[in-house]
Amino acid sequence: MTDTTAAPSATPKPDSTFKRILKGIALLRESNIGMFGAFLVTFWILVAILAPILPVQDPLAQNSLALLKGPLASLEDGSFYWLGTDDRGRDVLARLVWGSRLVLFWAGLATLVAYLVGMLLGVIAGYRGGWWDEGISFFGNVLLSFPIMVLYLVILTQFGPSSDFGRYLSETIGLSPIVVSGTIIIVAVTFGTAPQVARIVRGIVLDLKTRDYIAAAQVRGETPLYIMIVELLPNARGPLIVDACLRLGYVIITIALLGYLALGLPPPDPDWGKMIAEAQKSGSWGMNAMLWPALAISSLVLGLNLLADALREISLRD
View 1 (cartoon, helix red, strand yellow):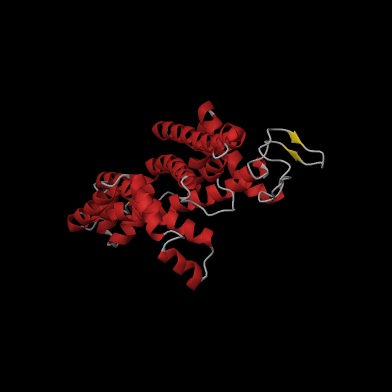
View 2 (cartoon, one colour; view 1 turned 90 degrees about the vertical axis):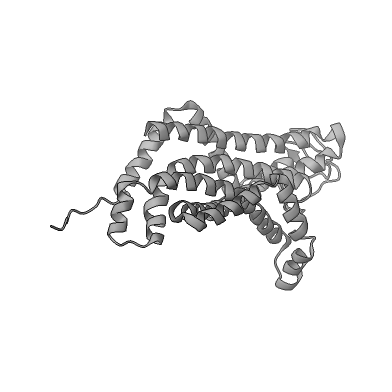
């Protein structure tokens, strides 16, 4: 006799997903550390979004009468600098505000691309197995065998804006230097991060594919692509959301370090890492101009780490 009982779907209904989100927010409010982390992250996101309407000066405007001024600097011409100026007389606060847009945009986009590639490779390796698993795992191990910063430096020096490939993109195709630099950073982060994400997803999928709802989907005749995208990946989202918060912090540090090494986003656009490198040339006189971008990087990464810890606690209680 044919069993006509419908197999339960692994994909949550919209109302149940909304309830889970509300429950997660309620649980997050019970964690002081999580709320502080969410506050720091939300603060910088709002700063980046509202940068065009915030009452700050032009981040590229230079004032030769206001070189390396300290916080609350006021000049006779009426200029006022809340956080002081850098070695070229540019407003540190304005450069922090506009720099947050570049950092969050390129770090977020690079992390998103790396996760999409990593999740795709991981779910294929875990579900299909066989030579798929061996090939993807071998390729990932080769990339992971390189020191991560060395890998970034090789990619950026060989394909960055100053390379032949970068000049081709700028001069022939017509891409702006910041787009070329940002794209190469995304490629570098993807090569460095996607294998790690794929390894996490592969381990989760190896456990999930033995569940009854996967067998039910196979009995229904669903394609492997449907099972991987609709049945497996949504059920692996919990650990991936926590890991994404942590890796976004790592990418922010990476972009800042590349900017410090003059391999990140090109001038004159403000970049937090580049701000530190420029102020460092002035020695102790540039301490104030170095302090604020360093605090900005630390606060944003700290917020992401605290938020990740809170989300991990919520996932364990849920």
